[in-house]
Image 1 (cartoon, one colour):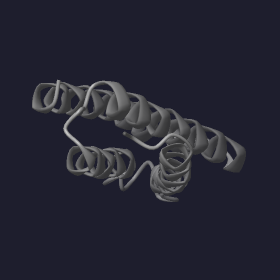
Image 2: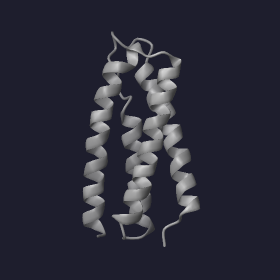
Image 3: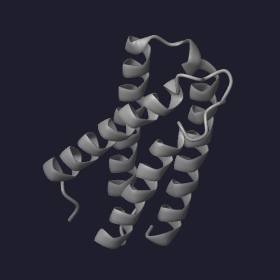
Image 4: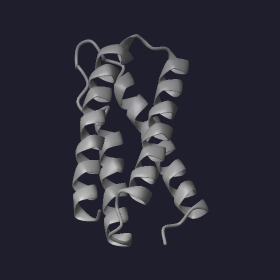
Length: 119
């Protein structure tokens, strides 16, 4: 699919990231450490697997599009904790969730592309 798959996959990733960000921004101030860790790792792993699967099957344009799509996934995961509510989330728990999600995303994405590299 090439560029069409790239555009549709990017739109899907940004759409899901926007909704996850809303969930995290509204609920993160009430989470304990375990909740931040669980949600952050879950989001990072799910986005990493989604980027790998969408990159493998929807994008056939070579390494350039896959690297670009992986970078867009990285930005989408980092975006979930961007600008938390300054009054309600004074402990910046949404930002902590995004950091854990970003690290998990990087580990999963690199691991999956090392295990199953594109042709």
